[in-house]
Image (tube, rainbow, N blue to C red; front, side, top):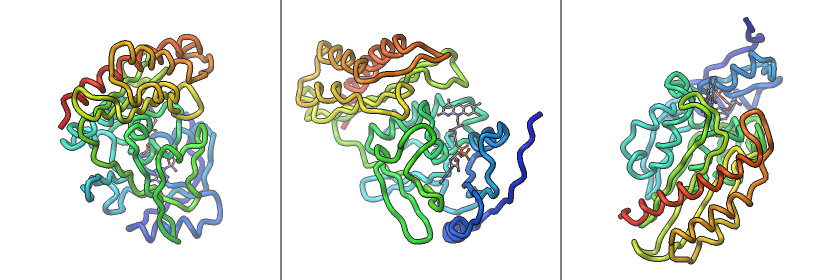
Length: 294
Ligand SMILES: Cc1cc2nc3c(=O)[nH]c(=O)nc-3n(C[C@H](O)[C@H](O)[C@H](O)COP(=O)(O)OP(=O)(O)OC[C@H]3O[C@@H](n4cnc5c(N)ncnc54)[C@H](O)[C@@H]3O)c2cc1C
């Protein structure tokens, strides 16, 4: 059995104490939330932080709060809880769908939304729908706070713009526009405990139920070092009246917008073919929802 390396452990009572501890760390420290990624990597010997800073006791980081036409989701909210809020199910169904298929019940009951973002896995389930809906993340350190679009947060596998002394405190999502809809589909070999071979999140805004597409986001996951936009698919959709033909054209363009690698879970060719299928399905579902949404 692999044992964890030795490390110090700090458990701050509030955010300012957490920021003070992180700012004062001499060695290599890390925030720990659910530990489902961090502890696995430590056991494998991939990382060996000298100090872990546990944030689970910090008040306010595990809640969802409405804020002037948007909602704030505390970074420490566990994924299972995310699926229990009516506001998530009703207003952000794409996020609900992604949270429902993340790992297994055991993982969902420990993993946090913040951990799923900061860990920056190319196949992570929550970033694609969050990026598609224009989410922003709030980062705090001892010197202050900043808000960054999630779309600009990721640099590559395991790499983000977060600084060593910063804590991701929460995610901000604006209220979805009228006549908008979104859908997320993850393709894996199994029904549970599966890391995506390909996943697609699509979000559409119409000007009226039978009108033209005002905005479109098609986010592809597991086909690049980080979640990416299917840029030409998005361009093709915007300003057009949605038809089956248009969706098929966008789906085909999406498969050309990515250049995945071959690996043990699927070949590049298979992944591209699946991007086309999932883009078509997610756009069709998003459009149906947008036509009904008020
Ligand atoms: C068996 C298994 C199955 C899995 N299946 C899936 C899956 O299907 N889909 C999927 O997306 N993921 C999956 N994962 C990965 C993992 O569960 C998720 O990425 C999880 O959401 C990580 O959250 P956590 O709270 O456990 O993060 P932790 O492990 O605590 O932390 C992960 C990283 O984020 C940093 N961090 C955490 N919170 C903060 C914060 N607030 N501020 C700054 N830094 C922070 C930590 O320092 C660390 O670097 C799986 C993992 C396992 C072990």
